[in-house]
Amino acid sequence: MMSLVSLAGPVLAHGDAKHGKREVRAISKDEHAFGREGDAKKAKRTIRVDMSDKMRFAPAELTINRGDTVKFIVKNNGKLMHEMVIGTMKELKEHAEVMKKHPTMEHDEPYMAHVAPGKTETIVWQFTKAGEFHFGCLVPGHFEAGMVGRITVK
Image (tube, rainbow, N blue to C red; front, side):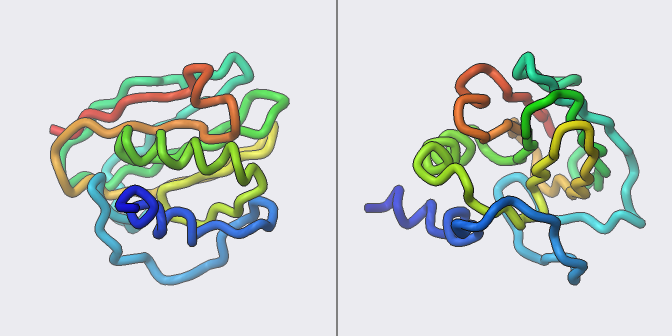
């Protein structure tokens, strides 16, 4: 029962509609274990992350300073749909299981980028806590095939 409750937030962020672009809106103040949405004007770094049909991210290992706001430019170099979702490993694994049951879930969270083949999307995130976090592609089968990376926040 507790695991269903912990999934309520991420699951409720999705519907049965297709993935789409986020509407322009105010920056969320919601705090997560891995930080909060960042203000692009305050980004200290820009990190380009490439995704491929080999089910890999490049780079797959990132080191970021606590408190830094990072602008991720996420490019899909493949022919398949891919996404980059930031979170704890536990959250990513739970969300990957939900995605298997509901593969058309809509993503509209600031820590997610759902990227069509050949396209680029942006995530701006502030890492407010030190620790080890991850990012993964939660399109069914991709995470399990090894499409996951690690973020170390110092």
